[in-house]
Structures are given as C-alpha cells and as structure tokens.
Length: 213
Image (cartoon, rainbow, N blue to C red; front, side):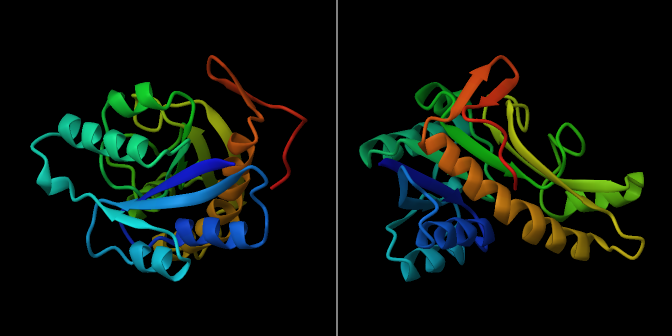
C-alpha cells in the first residue's frame, strides 16, 4: 500500500473527497497516511482529525524562502515515509526540490481545463472569474503531475462542464468542484498508487485503458 500525503491550506473540500473515496474502498493500493497544512487554522486539519489521519502544521512564514520551506517539507514527507504526494488546495509555491524527491509522484488539482486559465495568479475564485470574463462555453478541472513549472506538468485526467448563462464565479466554482474536482482527484490518486500511469514526455498513458469520470 502506498502512503499518501495530502498537502492543504484551507477548507479541505478536495481532501474530504479523498477521505470519502477511501472510506468507500476506492483506493486499491494506497492509504492517506498524513495531512500537512501550511495554515495552522485550516479546517482541513479538522477533517483529517475526524478521519483519524495524522495532521502536521508547517507554516510558510516560519521559513525565510520558498526553497527553505520546500526542503523542510520534503524532509517531513520522507521522514514519515510518504510515497505519493497530493496537492489539494495547497497555496504555497514549492521549488524543484520536491519534484526531484518525488518525480512523477506528485498530483495537483486545478479548477480549469489546462492550458487555459492556469499559471501565475490563477487560483481559487480568480480562475472562474477569468473563465467568465473570457466567455468560454465550457470549463472544468484538470489533474496533472507536478513539475517545476506551475500548472505545467503532464495532464492525467480532465473533465468538462458547460458554463451556464447565469453562472457567477461562485456558482461556477461550486459546480466545478462538485462535478469535476471531487470525481477526478480520487480517480487520479488511485491510478498513481496502482502504478497505472506511464509518462512519456507531456503524454500520460493510462495503463489498462481510458478512465470514465
């Protein structure tokens, strides 16, 4: 069984989706072994506590640079035996040390169809504001492997939904979470834990065929 570490900073809705998937027996080869928060006040820590998952607090402000913080995080992950790392609303920029320590073993969920509305400044509600301002007819979410380039790693899974004429950034954010993020992330985590992802450059092949989400 792979030891899954989930990194969080806020409410932890995607963490809850993972906890619920685990409770349903959807992780065949992995188990959430730890939750690490950059924010001492994150409600995600309470979600972890309720699920009897060890929680760790690693405040970003305690380190002088992103590189120093990343090294401390990698040290904690390795000390606790993490095999797979999942960024689930983790609002800290990490440096390449974590990618070197966990090559093709880190997943991130982004609330848009990459390469649209991603990269610097594209996070949280801002992503949905950008999508509506641009006038796209569909949006969605993407799970990708993490590289040194923000939101630039190979795509694992994507799911799209229609943008409705009456959507606000808040309503669109909610629908993307419920209909895309909470379905995609558990599927991708399970695939990674089962070693069912084969990376060839920018292309990720799912061993065993296409996954319907």
